[in-house]
Length: 345
Ligand code: CP3
Figure 1 (tube, helix red, strand yellow):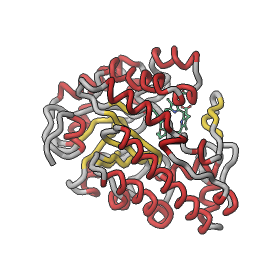
Figure 2 (cartoon, rainbow, N blue to C red):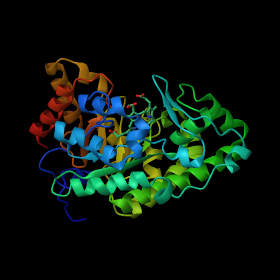
Figure 3 (cartoon, rainbow, N blue to C red):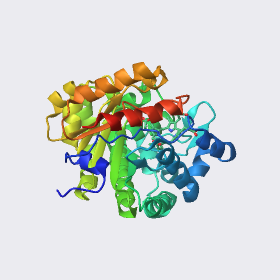
């Protein structure tokens, strides 16, 4: 693999870097005043639907923080809209999907999705962003949810703690569950490939809630479908980040599903992650986002602990263990970028 002009891409491909690259999951969002100003006038979905606005919001953290990658502003649940499941974000309640899928008939009623038509606004935002980022050293990351995590929202009808309806469907109607996963993995695969074709230079697959599964259930109900999405994206030659939380017991199976980078949350030390995963995959993570609220000296110690845990190994991207929290002080986020860059490799 030849070296890229991008620090982030080189780290993903386990190539040498001048300093460790850093970006943050959910780096665009309500903790930034610039984002809140736009959100006063437009809903989350309105921002997504207007490519110029989505591109602007994507660029806000790039300008304010000096991060090494931009992540497209969108949401993992957008494909639910053309599928016919419905999607609203109610104030303070998170996502609501009003036609949840709970039977074979519901699966059969899902509508076919052409991402270049039904999610064209996402591709348009990518094209605008590539143009805007043309002269910069900042690549653009596209993303989608992994089939399991998206299925959990589509079955539950919203966010969940116990994932009981999801697990009930797995246990009592496995054929229905597999049929849903088959549809979703096809749609998510097409969606991610369309993003790459539109110009995304790396992609992240968010399996945010997969840690709710046992390894045995993961292998049967999630892994084959994740593998389809991850493998197709990797075959296009871009870095593929495979992220989940609560995954300590799933890491080997997640690696087998695919991805050139595995994202770790803060519950799994990088040393442990590497010992389970081996050295032929890059690692991304894993500062606890709550530490962004700590006094700077504490934050500095915690950032250094993450770097020390990686012990200078190639193939490392600094990130949080999950997304930035709502009231995070922007200056602390900026300070972390400086700390990581100053620390070198
Ligand atoms: O990272 C970025 O800056 C890019 C944008 C992005 C959003 N959602 C915008 C958003 C990304 C990468 C996502 C992914 C996403 N969406 C995930 C996976 C990542 C993770 O956190 O595990 C999940 C599970 C979702 C589903 C989702 N979207 C939920 C549960 C919520 C409500 C939670 C909340 O904080 O209210 C959303 C809304 C959402 N998506 C916001 C943003 C910035 C909230 C802000 C707003 O309403 O303006």
